Image (cartoon, rainbow, N blue to C red; front, side):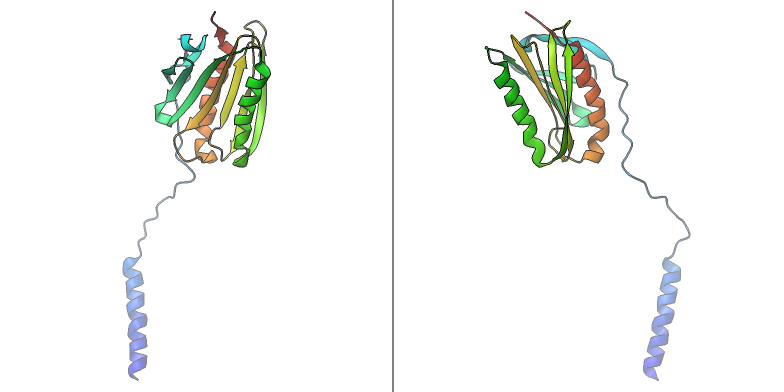
Length: 190
């Protein structure tokens, strides 16, 4: 009899505990990630003497000269940087392009795909490719622009956070437009 009393007490105690702990208030659960909004893109002419070029640079990006042939375009709020490097072509543009492509295709280990977007502007004497590296890669966008005879500028976008394609997609899309503007407006300085 004592054991049945203990069972009844346990059931009553559990029922009371459940009634006391329940709350009628319901709280909505967020779906997905926080929506990130960036300012409307505005561009200004940037004279990059150390890479022998000028181009339209996003006002949102901060230019930082690293070395005589290197400029970083930093996006502090996005924790991202576009690294730009200039090399003089000394009769071997093919090897320089092959080197850039090898660096891009090293990301195939983590990438789910690489999309090549060729670019050509005979008026500015600029030709190149924008590579979109999809998936969990360290660099989502890489590119090069050359005049095929004297200059080549290569660039790569890196984030200083763990690569998560879903969370980085809005920032990659925003910076991609800036890179396209850079490529399309790049003019060589002599």
